[in-house]
Image 1 (cartoon, rainbow over the protein chains, first blue to last red):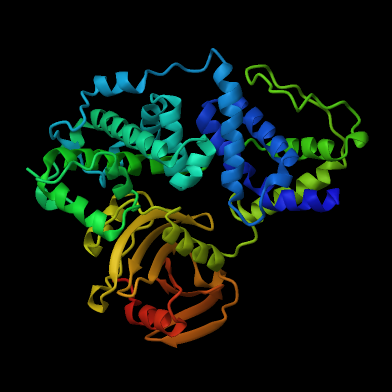
Image 2: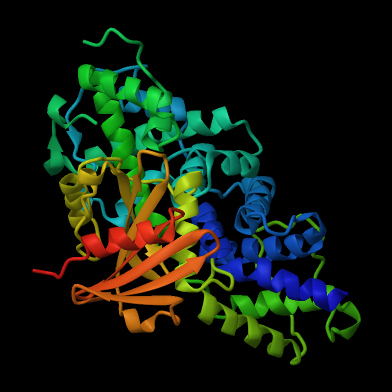
Length: 189
Length: 277
């Protein structure tokens, strides 16, 4: 019985270890902590494997465990990198409910946005907002799956994504002044 | 200036393709008239496009799988462990140095088996061959778990998007003459290879997804059927309700996937296959 359970776990959960480590690394920004977080997540997943419904999104189920450990444990760490509040960041970028049009980069010409630059801009966001971007844009979860992982309403995921992406866009725009140009009406979707 | 209300946070649903056509059309109309919302929309699209770049895999430590496997073995059979495992039930402080535990050698066999599974299957895919993965991608686009980064109905614009992003340079097949509307596309990974994926909707609402990646037709599993036409070899697969037609264009393998009747999918592929210039 245990062997069978273990075989199912290996096939359905353990094969996602690479994805779990990737998510843990993006959350903790530290290889050693990501390693610990991944191992803890897998062990907790094993203990809770009876609650997993076969055929559902095992990766989303594992990410929920990763995120739960991260929130409960990692946030107790006083050495966790400090981030500004979302309001402070929005103020810093001059956001209003709807701000006047500013020159914006062509989103389809992102050559100047290197991966480290994107990572740095993302890391500057408060955790809840950064996590929304990570879960939806990087881990490719639906809003509904991200809401389950973050234990919040789908509307909250939407709101966090909206504010996080605006800030991320503004940060990247500031990093790539050479790419600034105004999106004209003819280019509007 | 637009007369309709600013869509606000609804813009993020629009960017992610979560709105029905009516709501999306309203937003498109608003964006055409509202400079401020157009600027926000551009930021949202740019940010999403940039964040997608982080999808590249993070290299997992070489010994992590073996370490996790040993820990799992210890949990499953604690009496066979030669050294006491650490307290795994506690909410551990992640800042503490990790305790190194020596584990029995027999656990290595299981680790090796799972390593092999990783090599063969990749970290995210369980026993899915490439056609099955392409079929799964069709479903993922439909369920929006695989969002289209560039939502455009113009094939040339989508080609520019792919040309501007990392990955193989591809053409975007224009099916507008057949009243099949392009929805948009995204850089994706198919069986570990970077691909360009784009999606269409037929007038009846059926979805077609095309992917192109650098590879060889010969590397695919044996097809269910083969058609030779116009100098092309079309390899046809069925995975669940999905028909997949693969063909080679230069260094690119192209695949068209849909739940449309198989003959229709094949006919579209045959009609649109094109030798590289």
